[in-house]
Amino acid sequence: MNKAFIILAAAACTAAAVSCSNQLDIPQHGVLDYNTYYQTDDQITSANIAMYLEVRGWEYNVKLCKAMLTDDFWAGGSMRGDNTDLEHLNEFTFDAEQDYVENMFTTYYTLIYKANVILGHVDPELGDVAKRAIAEAKVFRAFAYFDLKTMWGNPPLVDHELAPSEYNVPNGTDEELWGLMEKDLTEAISSGYLVEKTGADDASTWRVTKQFAQALLGKVYLWQDKYSEAAAQFDAVVGSGKYRLFEDYGGLFRSENKHNCESIFENNRIHDDNDSFQNFSMYALMTNWRMDKMNWPADTPMMNTGWGFRVPTKSLYDDFVAVEGADGYRLNNSLKTLDQLNSELGITLKAPIIGEGYFMWKLRILASERGMGNDFVYAANTVWMRYAEVLLCGAEAHFKAGNTAKATDYLNQIRRRAKAPEVGSATLDDIKREKRIELFGESVRFQDLLRWGEGSRMADNGKQYPQLEVNGQVTWVNCNNSVSGFKAGKHDHLPYPATEIRLNSEIRQNAGY
Image (spheres, helix red, strand yellow):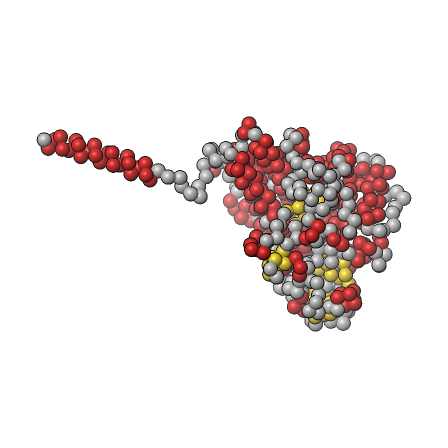
């Protein structure tokens, strides 16, 4: 009897344990099983959106870092020492511990990882949403690798999710890195699953398009001196008829003109006063004028807060004047002098600031573009490529391929919109100068200068800086820094972050760091 009781009790306990186990066997929230997750359109779309959000997060580090590494801007700020990281970039005194460089490097690989997740787990046989996600992932991966290759030289090539045993990845070779970009982009373009605008005035297409991939492939070819191949890609974008230059140059970057006819790719910000912080933008505050040192009328259209870390140089202003004169249409919609701020907006200085008397106007921050009047919230989109860049890259590719007539045509299209004198026969110097003034502040010049071997333009960065006095005069202050300035053989590449060097035993640091 006792034996029977024990057996029955054991059976009851087993049944109870099974019952309890069934009740406790519930999905673990917040944890994804990559082997089973990417099965529905919604799940695939969520992974796809993650790539767009990653690029949107580039704005602060990427745009600020690239701007500082050129001859277009002074670091600015309240006064020298306000932000030493940006000053070190601007003066080429940074090392492998530099935060902006590390953050930029990291965010590129984060995008590559997110693209690799899609490419490794989404089955194209699941349908059109899956095929589109795969095509876009290839474009995004090439987008990240283009910046890594052109600024770091030979970064590690990671074309799949890494197992722990694979974490030590050596530097990639030129052939491997360019080859991956070409393969990704050509496959994405030929897939038939990248969207296209219905026409130049289609402002509803926000995804990466076939034409964005073609323009990016054109840049990949151009940087390799494959001029005919590059020209063909830029011509394909032009020939599509889906883009044209936006007539109002001064309104190009305003929030009411999002996804205009010139936009090739931009990150979307949807204005929502109920959730304004989805448009949080430290970049807007960092780059707006140094407003605490300015007297401004209450009715000024400008956002009245800013920290002034992007101050245009006189050499940039002089290139505008050389092309279109001191009262040029594009110049007046790109830069303003202190005298113009006073006469047009009633703004004056109340304390000295860093600068030579020139202020960003093209990418100005308007009070009307703040979300709920919050200075940290900005409603305008971040533009990563526009049609003007396609025309100028196309002009260079055609010129180098020996087709001066086509190069001249593309260049003059830009000049006509700028209301600047057209050229009879374009020179390479014409194209380079036009690209500088047309695209300044848009994150392309540093890579151009490296490609053209013209880093010496920044050789004197950090020797002295300009102080704009209240009366409009400029005083030059010596920095007494003998190690500053761009140095060939070192600054032709950025350093791999020290953290990466410590964790990855296979990577080799670039020369000079």
